[in-house]
Image (cartoon, rainbow, N blue to C red; front, side, top):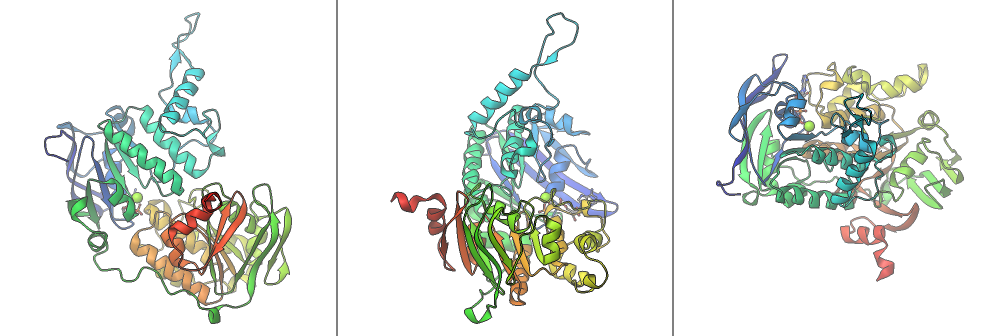
Length: 505
Ligand SMILES: Nc1ncnc2c1ncn2[C@@H]1O[C@H](COP(=O)(O)OP(=O)(O)OP(=O)(O)O)[C@@H](O)[C@H]1O
Ligand SMILES: [Mg+2]
């Protein structure tokens, strides 16, 4: 990116404290037209806060923001929007009960004159639907119906709608705060091409991600934040992944994944499925033994999450057989599953129902208190110890969850389930949005739990994680088991089975 391209955005000397605690200290960040500038850092480093300063959500305590060289001081997100700043937040912010089109045009609905001239203008629903469809088609997305309520979309589809919403507003500066955290692999490809298309139009993109691969695939420059300070800003081609990790974490991270189980570590089968199915799954045969981590791979829509939800009783199996520790069990509600000793950590923090205004500690105890009474409760984990082992970076366990960074909220979700000490733990994208250091801590923790006899079923669209953690990988395709792979297979083999490419060859 040459210096001759106009400086679209220049943030300089940005500082911000919350109730006396500094979160950002004299941070500089600039962005050129047509550039992808990555912003990286550990959970809680201040990335999202910096973006919220840009968006007018937070006023900075010090520092200036310039767009096209002109100082701006947004006091409301709407002002930022009008100046061409669009933010796709880490947490999805769509209105669940409105349609896709209504969400895309929220607050700027196209209107047509009332034929009798009585009203200023009636929302032109047809124009809204047509323009939404055109925007979706423009980015190559045809599976989303503009008239569908957002509630019915997958998390991944909602993310696409967020992006389309930004495009509808004619944004020139687009902030993507972990846009791929919820996307499946083929959707990541879609996002990549979308990013490139935006860049060709001269849009500047601030791109926050915990995934190294994306930083290197997409960005021209990368800025590193650590504890609210900028520790580096470099052309991406001048740094390595190890450099970035060192700058972010302040230390080297050794081997990425804990040792796998060997045969002698494995105990009896804890979870078994025989011919299990429902509207989305058919004929699933699967066994997970004590001490074992079984990975579940598959494309978006292959049934990965449906499998997790079925085992957990949220969308139960209707056919076949499920046994837990040898006894038949077909939970018809999550409550029944939890009582029987099954835990589920899902990908969707909001739906997970963290009590945002309550403390970390109370959230960690949410499931335990909700489901167990008296004596049964005594068998649950020591929450203080658990929170310490998860290293939830915060000012103590009394802090409100709403004030935690995204990745730390995900750790609270994990704590909530681990507190129950389930015999079978189902993980659905367990490290979504979690930084590299914390990810390693979570991996270590999950492996430890397996060693203590837990049976773990882990869904992840992050193939390196799946390969690194699993003792065995089950690949789903079209709601059925397409095959099983031994530990340490390559990504290509998983993709081949997931897409069915092997039968075409
Ligand atoms: N409104 C607020 N009040 C008090 N503290 C806050 C508030 N918003 C954020 N914080 C704190 O500021 C710090 C930085 O949070 P931020 O969300 O910017 O981190 P992040 O770099 O985006 O992390 P992640 O990778 O987890 O998304 C965290 O310690 C967080 O708890
Ligand atoms: Mg964040």
